[in-house]
Amino acid sequence: MVKSNSNNMSAVIVNNISKKYKVEKSQVTALNTVSFEVLKGELFGIVGPDGSGKTSLFRVLTTLLLADSGNASIEGYDIVKDYKIIRKKLGYMPGRFSLYHDLTVEENLSFFATIFNTSIAENYDLIKDIYQQIEPFKHRRAGKLSGGMKQKLALCCALIHKPSVLILDEPTTGVDAVSRKEFWEMLQRLKAQGITILVSTPYMDEASMCDRVALMQNGQILAIDKPDQINLQFSKPLWAVKAASMYSLLKTFKKWQAVESCYSFGEYYHVVMKSDLNGNDAIKSYLLQQQFLDIEVHQITANIEDSFMALMNKSHD
Image (tube, rainbow, N blue to C red; front, side, top):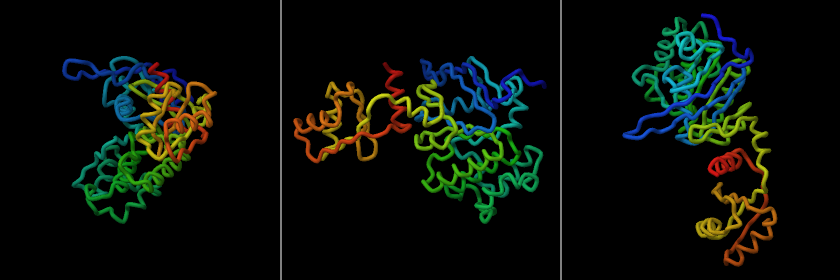
């Protein structure tokens, strides 16, 4: 099979992919003309909430689901015509733990190695840093592992045939903060070995660990750029506000016509005003008029979650 004439610098190219599902008597749009490219050796993130289309997109790219329209290629190979070649080049870790619960850690890894006509010994160097953490439990059944250990085993199984492109669907969902941190450190080491990584996550804080991110909502890409560049696009002053009665404070902000948006962020509300004139003093003055106590207002720098909220609100206008 001869590769298509695609960009030699791109490992993944997606052109106007659309997908709809029939739900009872109506159709739900999972993907709406999605397009982007992932460069070779890049750690590229798809960031968005549940239901935004991340899993449907990954199932199309891994040749498990046919798109209604559009096309895509992995390292120059068409995802429909060349699906057999692509499956050998891809490592895929689905969102749900999909290994065999009744097989041991070692048996699962050996099984996946055998499918690709290889062995644990042959590609041990690739998985060594990850596998050594679970090797003491190699005789334990996979179903008895902790969330973090299952995650590491699934990643080893996805890597055992030495793929050039790794696709991970929400790999850190449901695991503890320490395991999440360790997992992203592992991804950075894999990237250093030249593996192209496409990873989805609902966690906005993980976006900063990617080379570039695509912010996704309702089956559409809202923005694609480096995380810090996306944050620079946040053009209006942003205020962190809290008071003694947070529930009443939220209702007050929702009713105040000077407020453009207000959403919860930790112990504060992040507030964007319609006019730059409504700054710190104006917010405090208004809240005092509404008889709020222990008012705290200060200007902050937008993070990736703030940028996502702004882009989402803009797409609804």
